[in-house]
Each structure stands twice: as C-alpha cells, then as structure tokens.
Image 1 (cartoon, rainbow, N blue to C red):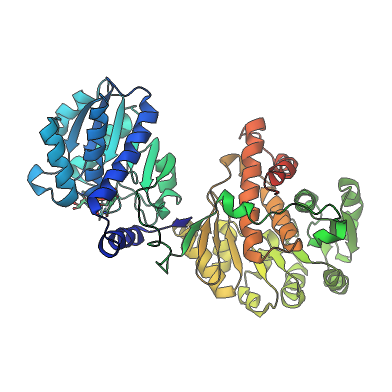
Image 2 (cartoon, rainbow, N blue to C red):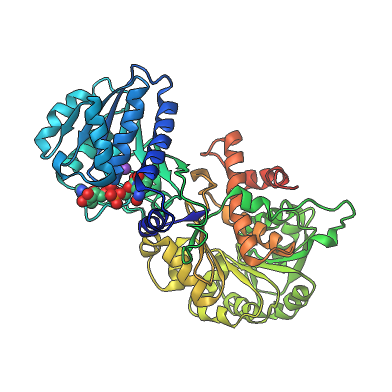
Length: 517
Ligand SMILES: NC(=O)C1=CN([C@@H]2O[C@H](COP(=O)(O)OP(=O)(O)OC[C@H]3O[C@@H](n4cnc5c(N)ncnc54)[C@H](O)[C@@H]3O)[C@@H](O)[C@H]2O)[C@@H](O)CC1
Ligand SMILES: [K+]
C-alpha cells in the first residue's frame, strides 16, 4: 500500500473528482461514514451518548459535520464547535454544514479564545470528541483558539477520534505544527499519510484506520511518482514460500558471517542464530581465532572458521585470503556485529566491500569502519544492504543523529541513492530506501526491541533471506517486517520491558512458518 504526502493526496482527490468525475461531496460522505463507524466502535451503543465535534472551516471540518449527522441519526446528542465564522464556509463543507443546521444541531462558534469558556463546560460528561479541525490542508502553525482547543481536548480525558490526521500534525513529515491533538484513534481516507508513521506524528495518531472512500480504481495506479510504500503483511506473504519436500540443507543457501571480537561474542552468536532460525541451511561464522573456542561452545548448529587476529581478539588483515575463500563458497555474507573498528578491521571490511561478489549485509562496526570513505560502496558489483541505526547513518552521511531523525525518509533515500544500496534505517518505524528513490515504512515492532542485540538478529535474518535467493530489496523488507513481528509476538509472552534479543530469535521460526504457503 502506498504512503503519501498531503500534496499527493490532494492530487489523488483532484484526479478522482475532475478526471474520473466522482463528486467531492460523495467522497466526503464516504469519509464521514468511515468516521461514524469508528465512532460507533468507540462508543458501543450510540443512542444517548454525548459527542462533541470540533470542526475547522475546510473539508476536514466538512467530514466532521457529515459524521455529526450520522451520529445524530443514531440517537447521539451531538454538538459542534466551529473554529471559523459560519459565513466563511464554502463548497462541500458548506453543504454538510447547512444540513446539520437544518437538522437543528447546536453549533458554537469559537473565534476568540474566550469563546471556549462555554465549550469547557460542555465537555463535562461527554463520551467522545471528534477532532475535525485541521486535516491535510494545515498551513503554518496552530495559534489562538485552535491552540487552546488542542490543550482542552488533550487535557479532557475524553476519548478522541481524529478525522484524517490529528489536527496540528503535518501529513508530510509528522511534525507538530505548534500544537497537536493526541488521538486515541485516527481514521484516514484513501491512503495513509507519511505523518501517520513518522514521529512525533506517529505518537499522536493512536490506532490508525485506513478508510475506503471510493476513490476510483486506477487513480492511484496511474499516478506515477508516489515514492512511499507501507510494508504490508500481504507483500511479505508473497515472498516466503513453502519448502519442497525433497529440500536438503544446501537448497537454502550457505551464509557466512564475519562478526565478533573479544568481549563481543554475543553479537556474532545472535546474527548466526537469527539466520538459522530464519531458514538458512548452513551457517559459518568467521571469528578471530582466540574467541573461536567460546563460539564453538555457544553455537551448536553453526560452523566456525577461526581467523588470524592481531592481539586482543581483533581480526587481522591476514584473515582476508581465508575470508574470500569462504565467500566463494557462500551465497550471502553478513559483516559487522561485534566486529570492533580497531586496528586492521576497517581495512578488512573495505577489502570485502570491494571484492566479495556475493550479496552483502553491512551492519554496526562494518558501517563505522566505512564512515571515513562510504563512497567505496559504489564500487560493489553484487548487491549490498546497509542496516544503520540513526547514529551510524549520521556518521555515514556526515551529519548529526538529530538531522537524520528529523528526516528519516530523506536520509534513507539519500544513502540508498548515493551508494546504490538498500538502506535500512533502523528505529521506531524502520525506513528502507531503494536506490531508485522509493522508500518503504515498516510498522511491526515495539519499544521493547530497543535492547542490545536486536540489530544483530536483524542482520542474521536479512543475510539468511539473501542466502535463500531473495533480492536485496525483498530480503530487507521481509527482514524488517518479520523481525518486528517476532518482537511483537515475543513481547506478548514476555512483556516489553524484559524482552531480549534471544527471545526474538526463539520466536522467529513460528512467525516465519505462518507465512509459508
Ligand atoms: N475532496 C477532497 O479533497 C476530500 C477531502 N477530505 C478531507 O479534506 C481534508 C483536506 O481539506 P482542506 O484542503 O480543505 O484542508 P483542511 O480542512 O485540512 O484545512 C484547511 C482549512 O484550515 C485552515 N487552516 C490551515 N492551516 C491552519 C492553521 N495553522 N490554523 C488554523 N487554520 C488553518 C485553512 O484556512 C483552511 O480553511 C482532508 O484532511 C480530509 O479530511 C475528505 O472529505 C475526502 C475528500
Ligand atoms: K483532524
């Protein structure tokens, strides 16, 4: 499913209305019905419930007026607070406003902050607030009575249903434009907007419902240039196929990890386990030789390849020939977890980036090893996936973590485009960038996964999928989706606070098997 900016959604609406001939008021009616259905779910019984609709003068407000009509028809006591003068309404919003006036619904105009005093009293005992003040047409910042209303709504303790997007959130980048409504549920129309998934907006959206408003089939398909997509379950289901009965372990691609150093054996372990539990038939771990005995004990199914080291359990440049030989026998390579960036390691990593001509995942210390010369990624002949967290991405792009977080989509697109790689920018709602400018947003996962080792597991999963023959884009998309889903499942059993990377590893097989057809 596509994810759009406010401008792209406006263009979709325009084409639906002007080029396909569906009247705007029909779209508005459908939008209002989706809002009404969500309101009904939140209220349970509608009859006798008190609902306050906070409406602006644009089409977002128009959706609110029409939803008010449906709620009143079902017996709710509905009042409307209008943040504009009645005379300023026009178009479809005016049509729906006139209907509720004809129905005799009470409307309170809030033109100055003082007008909210009476509204404050009306809130007592209300069962639901519908937030239809500002939608995708927001400009500038929220000020005056709207700003006061936002505080009133957020402090009221009454359940809030936002229409299209919480008022005050930018659909383009999830920014809070001065102040924003905190919704329990948001019903959006046609397609979700970027601001629903980008923080802080994602945190204001609550539960997101994507409502069908009858935009004619073909409007979205024929609209080239929408670069955003949501990673959906159905897309991932199409990538994971059932094993043939005559499969043998070689069928599923030997993968090779270069990971671990003294003190960081856990990272190497988790990457290998992530791959084994994601279906890799044969996993080999290359490690500095002094930690090999530890890895042999920790790992049962994976094989180890002890490699020359400099003192202190750090990989030496003398390891390169053995590593390249193992690369030739493997279908995919994962480099970085726990590797350290000391001594010869950056040189070894750079050599591999240039010379390992199999699909490659670069994580953690491998990325830090490239930070002084990331352009070396351009020289690769086989596909590469990079999996930086925001700090690692900032080092690669030569910027700050704050700047990366302010524009996560832009950062993923920039890295992917610049270096010709699949760029997986980790963090809440991971963004995957493709060199052609497309980006993909993941919504599985939970805050419990912000714990040591989960990134190593992700490297293991993506490397495993590459080894099983997926393209680098598919492996990255399936990897982040399944990784998050396993984290969600594990947190159901263990809670979020105590969740560990090992719990995610243990949950992987069952989660993946759900997808096998
Ligand atoms: N045909 C369509 O285009 C459809 C639009 N729909 C709804 O229409 C919305 C978009 O409608 P509009 O483009 O009219 O825009 P909005 O209704 O989101 O807001 C624009 C109005 O708010 C005012 N405004 C903008 N920024 C403000 C600020 N910072 N403080 C106070 N007032 C501000 C503007 O002057 C304008 O009157 C969508 O979010 C959706 O809810 C739906 O009805 C479905 C169909
Ligand atoms: K809204």
